[in-house]
Image 1 (cartoon, helix red, strand yellow):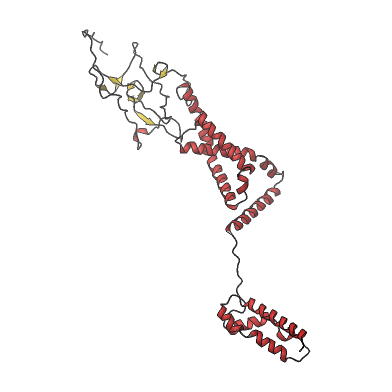
Image 2 (tube, rainbow, N blue to C red; image 1 turned 180 degrees about the vertical axis):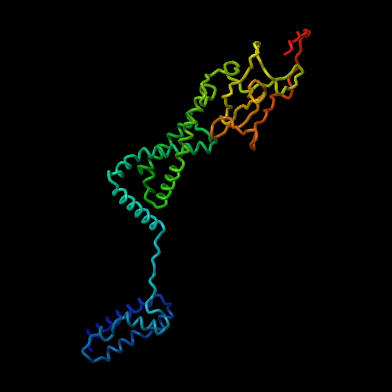
Length: 347
């Protein structure tokens, strides 16, 4: 055997052994060494002793078949289990999101009238709307649960949220760096779904907020009443919400009834809310009729569903309560000489 033939034989042997080793790659080094430790020498000797017309490849046979026979003889499966390449979660999520978007586009394009183009043209409107929903949620967290505030500070917050939402929608600025990441895309989808769920309640509270702002401007809350501002007791141009009566000895009087000189009851504006816009005065009762000229008036919560006094307020878990007097006692008061009071006619 000349040198050229020897090189060719060695090349065939090496290729055969490498292929067999590849098919035994799932075994431990000791197991592989036990199965093919002397394989190179055996194959080289077989080819050297072969004198027939067959080439080296025909003499050696199929390495896949040979490896399967070795594995079976040693008690292993004929073929190694396929190794699954673990891909990054972000890549899998990204592919899932891409597939979902393609599916959505395919379904939308099947609807006549090109609605997808119309919906996509409304994206800027949605960017502003979701910022407004976030603004309403922040107000809820800040304690404006029953109404929205439209003062200057909150309007500035709304402006910041709108700018941020539009930048996210456009993928501009710093958002462009993370917009394509799977985590960022999932977060954006979640926030959009949350905004959609909160939209109905936000719109309902928006109308209530406008009414409350008008009430703050006018000094009372109407909620459907046709009465004008100024229908209740006033002091220095400000409507009063309650009165606290003390007798001449300075002792607080609970249940004092007030009338003017013509016998007309002195009442507060029964539609007037307190500063928190969630509390108002509840009347005393006289033969079942409400009396708003009996002081001090009990303080109770507003029914969140109606914006009015709760019909079952006195039977609820938090019934109205009489407010504390501003002072435990007031200074005593007296006249220089108490005149004799005229006798009142019998009723």
